[in-house]
Amino acid sequence: MKNKTSLEKTILHPRNQHRFRYDFEKLIYNYPLLKNYTFTNEHAIDQSNSEQAKQTIDFSNPDAVKALNKALLITDYGVEFWDIPKDYLCPPIPGRADYIHYIADLLAISNDGIIPEGENVIGLDVGIGSNCIYPIIGNHEYNWSFVGTDIDENALQNCKKIIGNNPKLIEVVSLQLQAESRFIFKNIILPEDKFAFTICNPPFHNSQEDATKSALRKVNNLEETKSVKPTLNFGGKSTELWCSGGEIGFITQMIYESVKYPLQVFWFTTLVSKKDNLKSIYKTLNKVGAVEIKTIDMEQGQKISRFVAWTFLSEKQQKDWKFSI
Image 1: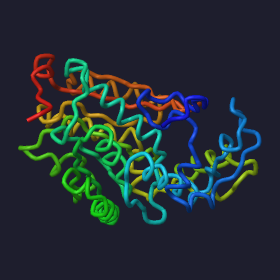
Image 2: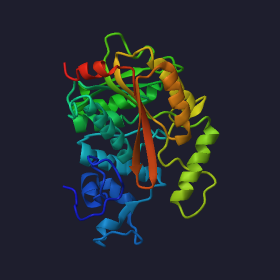
Image 3: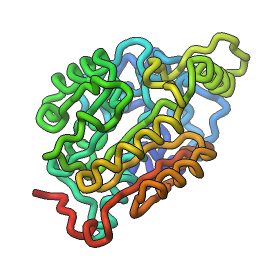
């Protein structure tokens, strides 16, 4: 149970399991190795003023972040096994969970206010990476099924290992290699497919240099001393962090491809890290004739992120959409 006396640490979605301070005692019990990375932050402010409430990790240390992720997935999502190869993206779970919960709210709008649940609600995870986070969270919280795609075969092999070691995922998560890296949906969405939503954490940067500069800023914000050679605390391979054209180029390509599947996907969605990109994204969406466009803001402490969602379904088609078969 959540500690109701503990201050909310962030402004996360009301159904997000991580709205309150991490219970490190419980997390360490479920994953003892996390203890190697925890320490007491004497400057932490908490009403209870307890040592437990002041426990934390060094978020600039990638090994510590990975250990915390393992503990959270075991404790809150019933995962039996989870690991990622060195240098692959280790995503912040609270933010990823928020994305899932806000998509659930989006689906509920056209379902009489009821969140559609069950294996017949299928999401397409574009760029699943090696971590399989969205399928893990989406299936645990709403019993959804997923198809995960990526251009990195090694990443998919690791996802396959995660799925194979978590029996509840075997029948509800499938993987597909995108053999043509310049495409997103081509060869992935087949004529018989029907997806309630797509979900995506696109490459944010134009180049490795841009990604390194961004990592340097983040690490310097986390550490008291200034680094000149930053370690990516959340990791990330080249295909996960940057691509030609950066975020706006990737999302623009996604929008133009989405036009070809207007009746097979209810909501196309993608994270947008740079607010300044919204104007261009909306312009492109209007150009291709999107029927409805939404931007959903998500707050995690001082950080504000967002995702854009669009559909080509008319109001009648939205109402007639069947989430269950």
